[in-house]
Image (spheres, helix red, strand yellow):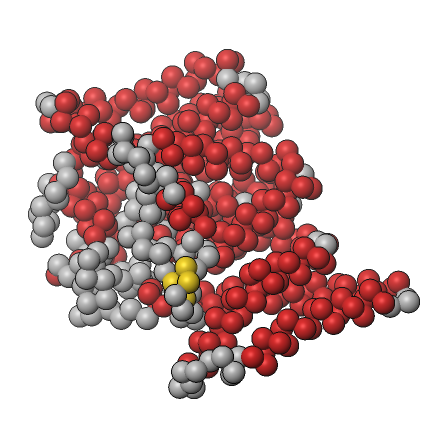
Length: 434
């Protein structure tokens, strides 16, 4: 249930956990957003929010407020809108993939990857307004695909409305109308649709107008926006690498394994899938690149990426995955072997250390040496047999067997390490408290 996972208690997370009564277990930023939502609906909140209502747009905050009115103020009600938004996002990813690849198997695999992606599983259940941003970003993009295919104005109108709604969930949603403009410019349709973009502009300025009416202090509202965007701040640019490649927590803390920062393998595999899609069908990969370029470029100029802003593009990273998973057996054996050495072997070693620890073993080096040698040698031996085989049919059969072993080892290890407390013990080993 969303009220039990992830759970941030003061004992486990002394700096960012909360122990405030019925909202015990919320991450600190979640509690801040809940405070704004309760303020919107005039409900009492245990702690007065330190930030004003003008700090963020209100669309998802109103959804949170509505959930509180229906189910009461508790962990379940405040996280429910994010869970609903992210669930709908999975459906839209499926529809996007059907439209883009014209293959339901590819669409199903991409959606399944997004469901299984552990960092998405965590962030999508939390009170992060980026979940609303991601939902409307996906909806806007789906409508763009429909418009590109059918050339019907209604899809463009829907796309600009959804892009405006993305911004109205959180100021970081500005990435959606910006992507919309870049997409249209790249496809040489910006001039033709400039009048429709005015709808997005109107939706973007709605919130400042309403906020200024409520507060009668436009200057204070503008100051809050500047503070939120960290405008003028520099030095956070490396956050782009941190949050897009490393295993990090919502607080920005970089997790480690035996003293080394951990890669976020779910993202790395998605980048591999995007590279493969680029190699085989470049035109279908361009849109995903435009999403990433817009996302990185916007936040680079705004002072760096926040620790959970990556929630916005997690669904887009899953889109090329189905295509790769369907075609993965046709990859070069050398490509798969490289992936095996760079990613599977470190993950396997981490898994072996965890399994050894279950038996009370604390000195791992000799214990895991034999399985390490086996995992290294099997694919190499099969490749040698294939290379020196005089029968071409046998050689191809050995290559296919080897590819299957490498793929299953990678995917199996990634899933096991994610859902056993190997990569994410900071979530899976935290116990809820009464």
